[in-house]
Structure formats: C-alpha cells, structure tokens
Image 1 (cartoon, rainbow, N blue to C red):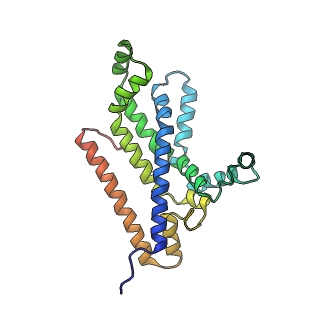
Image 2: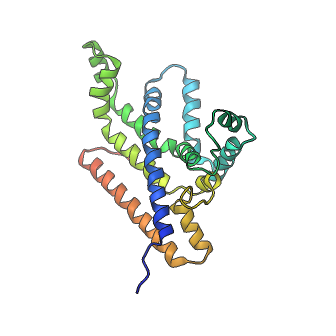
Image 3: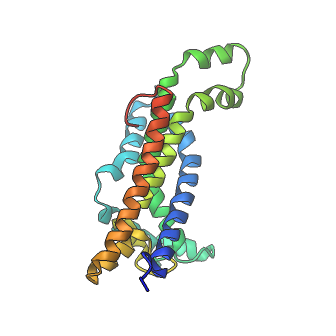
Length: 233
C-alpha cells in the first residue's frame, strides 16, 4: 500500500496556512483601503506622506528575522505592550495564532497598499471632481466611482497579500514558533522535513505551494490582461 502524498501534519499545516492567509488578506484590505486613499490624495504634508510611505514599504527591504525579532520583543510579557494586553485580558501574542496574524499583516502590508495606491492614482481627479460637482458625497463617490474603477487593483492587492502570506517563513517562525495546529504553517513544515532529511515530503509540499501560487497569479494577470490593465502591480 502506497503512502499518502501528504501526512496528517502536512494537511494540518496547509489548512493553517490558508486560514492565516485568508484572515490576513481580509484585514489588510479593510485597513489598507483608507490608507491607500490618503496616500493617493494627499498633496499637503509631504513630509508626513513620505514618512508613511517609507514606513509602509519597510518590510520590503527589512530582513524578516529583524522584523520578527522586534515584534517578539514587543509581544513579550515584559514589554509595555505585553503588560497592557495582559491587563486587558487579551493574553500573550507571542507564539500564538493571533500574534501570527498581526505579524503577517505588518509584513504583507506593502503588497496590499501599493496596488491600491496605483489603482486610485490611475483614476485621476476629473471623475471625482465631476461627481462632487453633481452633489455626490464622499461615500457615494467612493462606492459608485472609485470602487468599481479600482476593482483590478483590489484583486491584485488581495492576491499578492494572500500569496505573500502563504510564503512567509522568517517572521512566522520568530513570532509563532513551531506549535502543531497553532503556528506551524506550511513553510515551517517544509523546514521541519528538510531538517529531518525527509526530502520527498518537503518536495511534495513545496511543489504544491509552488503550483498553487503560480495558478493564482496566472489567473490574476490573465484577468488583468483581458481588462487591458498594464503593469506588474
């Protein structure tokens, strides 16, 4: 009888990875939309805007272990944040799934914000000013004009955020550790297989993630091409 391609631990890690990526993507879209709108519309306070842009893009150049290390310190029970959370009854974030969600959101933030900024910038001000002239409020303008026109940007942001979260390793290992069913995601499971010299299992899991990521990106860029949207992001 042949052994299954994926073990129970592999399936558990894959499910946890998809769960993490889904939650992170949803939360990032909610948080990043007003932030991207502000970045695309702000002409005043250029120094503040530049500082926010640099802060958002920091995970792109910062080693994941560095970000994970400082988040680990911030989440520790001895820090002011850890003590505040303990006082509020939230509990410890380090080596927990909620802590993993927060860390992943910070690390994947630029992959969601930047496509949204590009999409909002591409709309321009003419249609928005015309809507304002006709008496449309800010919410109506966003709902009926900005949101439909920026739909390709939202799709790209969601897919890049999801795919990037799936591929995280350094941050999730530093913050989440390696707790089965709680913080052991697919990338950590692959690392465990390699450490145990279980290369066939590592290959199967890696190949699955590779094919999944490629298919998702292929669908997104195929859709963008059909709609005539240019550019990588």
